[in-house]
Length: 171
Image (cartoon, rainbow, N blue to C red; front, side):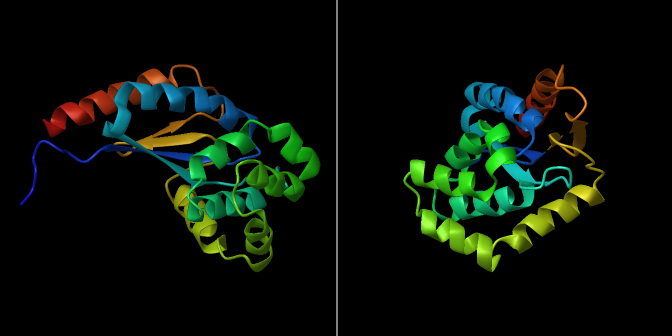
C-alpha cells in the first residue's frame, strides 16, 4: 500500500570538492534550501575533486568515511569551513576534524591508506564528467545542470524555481 501524500523528495545533487572555497560559500545556499524545503528536498553531495587542489581526493575519501560513521554532513561542513587549513596541512586536518566531531579518527587514517572509498569518489567524478561538470560547485536538479564555479549569483533562486516546479508537478 502506498501513501500518495508522501511524495518522493526533489533531489539536488551538488558536485563539490572539500578544498574549494566556492563550495564553502555554497553552504549558505544549501542551508537556505534545507530551511525552505525541509524533507521535500534531498541534498546529495557528489565528489568532484579538482587536480589543482592536492588534498581534495583524500578529503572526498574522508567524507565518505564520515558518512559510513554516520557523521557525513557535519564532517563535510566542518572541512569546508577550513579549506585554507586543508590546503596547508592536508590529511592531518582531515583526521583532526574527525576527532573534533567524535568520529573514529583512526578509521579515517586507515580508510585513507586502504582506499576503501575510492570507488565511490571515482564513480561520482566519472558521472560528473559524463554530464559535463567541469568545476565546483555544480548543481543538478530536475535534469538541469547549473554551474556555480564561475558565480553563485542567482543560483539559489534558479534552484528554487526548479524545485517549486517539480514539487508542484508531484501534486
